[in-house]
Image (cartoon, rainbow, N blue to C red; front, side):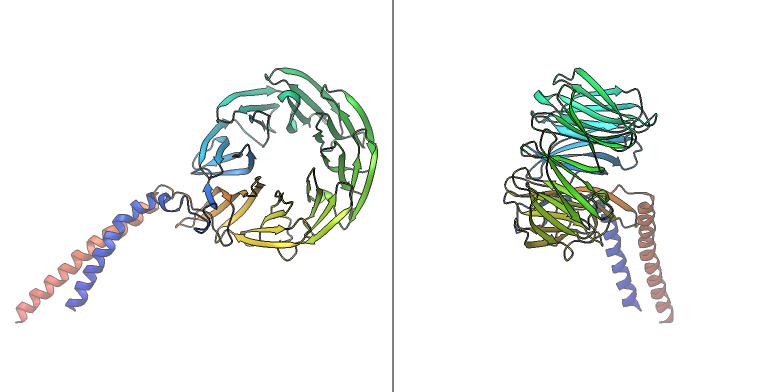
Amino acid sequence: MKKIAWKSLIICLIISSMISNIGNFLQNFEAYDQNYPLGLSNSNSWSKIVKDGGSLFEPYCELVNGSLYIIGKIFLEDNPNKYLYVSNFNTSGIKEWELSIKLDDYCYISYLFDNDNNLFILNIDYSSSKILLIKINSSGALLFSKELSLDQYISHASLILGENNSLLIFGHYFYPYPGRLFIMKFNNADQFLWNTSIYLDGYSPNIVKDSGYNMYLYFSNNSIFNLAKINSSGAIIWQMGLENKIQLLMVDSDNNLFIMGDKSYSTGYILKLNSTGNQIKEILIENFRASDGEIWYLNDLYDLLVFNKYSMSILCYDLNLDLKWSFSLSDNIFAHFNLRTYLAKDSHNNVYIIQNNAIGNINLVKISSTGEFLSRIIWGGIFFVTPRSLVIDLDNNIYFICNCEDYDIWRVRYRYTVLVKNPLNGGTPPKPRRRDLDIRDYFLFSVVGIACIISPIALLSILRSNKKNKKKIS
């Protein structure tokens, strides 16, 4: 009995010393996991948490002049305010700068980089007739923040870069119905130049520009689908009616226009026009619906990729719309409407497809320039991971940004955003710094600590009592 009591006392003292250090361990958790490498065998592979204590909603990743820009709306822990967030990482994963701008409200953002690597961000708020235009230079300095008051509520707005670093804002007024399109232009000194508007009857507009800074605009007026070419001064050069609704416009390096849409419920089409609006060629794609959100990717020098996320196949056409190859992804990628999928190409014209799978990890599939399967990796581990962007640099390094979800020791879910370079098969994202201790932590430490103090006292009391009883008996 005496040996058991002494063993219990020693165990209590050990547990007590361990408990006294748990708080320090939790507070310094970041030092162990913040820069966790994906694989020690590849020093050029890393993952970084973008922002401590916050998760980015719909983040974007852009590679500009050798720097990685992260752009998004951020939710900070225990902070009800809304912020626009921008940060800059070098290709070694070191954060050069970050900037958070408080907003009154936001619904979505549009952004672009000018020829001097200045970043323009347009913040749109459905609940008002105001939009916020922000300009940030490559060093992270806020050059200006300008609020533009419009005469009606808007449902959409985007940015277009014009000649000599001029800026165009293209948008859609949705109230009062039926609404109208508008285009506003500013010079490179941010001075207003002109605006124009076109009435429409409810269909979402689409706009692209060519190398000569002309704009191609798709809209619907009086239930007629229209395509118009507008020059850099806002004048309409030509306009034509279309038989079918357009889902996407794209322009190649020769200023040929590619129009994509649906002929019927199960048949899609691609129409190629020259810069004067004359038809060059049209092809039909069976068992395909562009309106269901498939991904299109145009490479000016090589080809046009069509990704059907329901049949899980990729069709590759050259710029004459002749089929080069097709590839089925059904063995490597899941067919599910709620899964995020992104495509990119490297300098050898290999195709990369990234998608979160049914259990929340990321699949990254590589296909050769001739449509042959090359490799696949799975990344994410026990975390629920959702990819948001995929970019590849000139040295064929892969970068993507993703949102991660995990649970703390109290099963409280927390979210954070991770930037990844060259992921390795089986790699996992880093864990963020453990949150500050809350009332449950203090309660646990107090109860266990008090128990660890009382238990030795009780054991000593029992031992002394037993010793006295033995003396009396003897």
